[in-house]
Image (cartoon, rainbow, N blue to C red; front, top):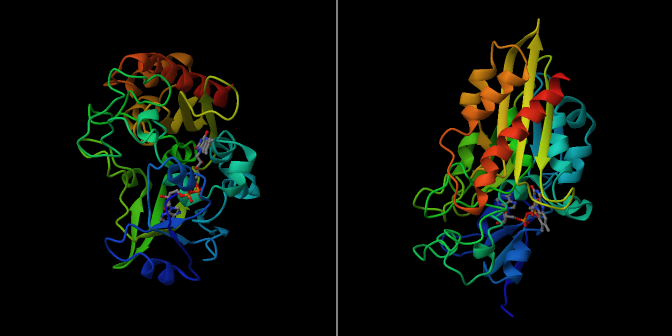
Length: 327
Ligand SMILES: Cc1cc2nc3c(=O)[nH]c(=O)nc-3n(C[C@H](O)[C@H](O)[C@H](O)COP(=O)(O)OP(=O)(O)OC[C@H]3O[C@@H](n4cnc5c(N)ncnc54)[C@H](O)[C@@H]3O)c2cc1C
């Protein structure tokens, strides 16, 4: 048993002050990732700063179509919000495909963005893992890497897939993450927030120590768009994605006028497939067009052994999802 201190913050400034530089203290939101990792002895924070009473639990729809989502809005409340499910079905569907009802009731928007990778070698607390123990190596290279490992964006230092479904939808929609910290407020574009592992996989995102996510703002929806999330996995529920696709399409006069595409389960961060979007734009919405875009999305993909099948599966996820939008 490792002792830790528990502090309940009443405001964002109080929360930030409770995490002095070098303290190793962390914020506690729903706890569904953090408490697991503490029980596994993968993380050992000496202090938890509970941020459940900061009031960051509201969803506001602006006149210009953007939506502001408080960091503490639960995955359930976000998925079931009337405006979200009507205007951003891709986000609702992604959220509802994740975890279980009980977990979604606790899991928060910021916690979901900051959830840790599901690589078994990271979570066992003892294997070589550059993410958990910098410089120790990567046991997944040549190890069990079928389910939760990436074919895009990885390196020999780490190729664990980013596990979130919600983030894949947000990457497709476009969003801004709002951050407050000891040095004031700042904003980061959603697609810049998660970092590729490169040679420093322990640095997973753009947050500095003590900084807190206060809210996320979704871009306004594309006019006359349709959107959907497709998650492929070994069993139909309570399972992380092997490959997933978030797609937003605007089709007019028999042509694709605009397209947004993002991938999950196959990449080390929520993966916006910009080059594939360019292939779609200005083309007829046919299976052949979708197949060409899917092939471009996986250009440069690398198999690490057991996970090579994801290169074909990910392309099928794109083609099936896009086809469903124009059926
Ligand atoms: C069995 C299981 C199955 C799952 N399946 C899926 C799935 O299929 N798809 C999916 O997408 N997810 C899945 N998840 C992950 C789940 O979505 C995350 O655990 C959850 O979203 C984390 O949110 P939380 O509020 O509980 O975060 P916490 O556990 O409270 O926090 C996670 C991390 O974020 C930090 N943090 C939290 N809020 C803030 C903030 N506002 N500012 C700065 N730092 C903050 C914490 O310090 C911690 O490091 C699963 C989890 C479990 C346990």
